[in-house]
Length: 273
Ligand SMILES: [Zn+2]
Image (cartoon, rainbow, N blue to C red):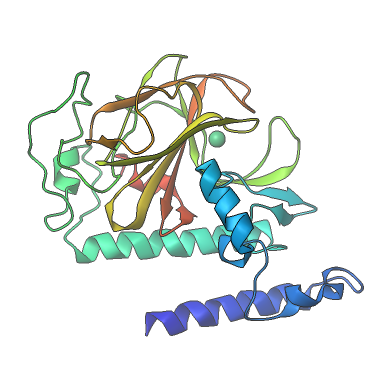
């Protein structure tokens, strides 16, 4: 049973975490130790808090760490960067395994149509928008491929890094793609615009929900008004323009993917083999 595997993994990670707790540290917080409750996730919020988050239209997009442990916007409060990364990689592998079971074949050829899943995407439809990303078929429903035209340089990969602005260790749960301000951003899969917002970290942000539990997140945009929350978008259509807003040191696109509410490593969903 896969559920059992996930629970076992969580108990294992939780055990590691408890084992390294400093004396007199987090252990003093009672609810924090209850194995059935992990404060810091959306599900653990009070009803009114959940409503506030939903009313805002987005979840916080970036975790914050202090002394190597997550203190804000975490999968689990207190989780280490290494364990957080391990969870993300497990989810990424699970997502890729799921796609393979549906006929997805990873490719290094750079030809996107071979990545279309027969039962997950319909593919082949004519472009329904101008401009249209030339490598993304209009019917694609899973976010595989590039959100920008071409294969722009990855200036910051997914993974642990020292944040260039805060100087703090951080798990960068996205890829940063080099792009001049005003570059067209395309939806790699059809979906619905879930939120368009501005905050201090993400700057102008956009989040699109896709089928099969996938979401794509775009930050530091210069224009997030090309599509509106609630609007459906077709794969390959332009949805935003890149910029340098929010906590950013230069023009780029911060591109993240979530699966079933949790970040996965987007690198392996780009069209780069
Ligand atoms: Zn980034």
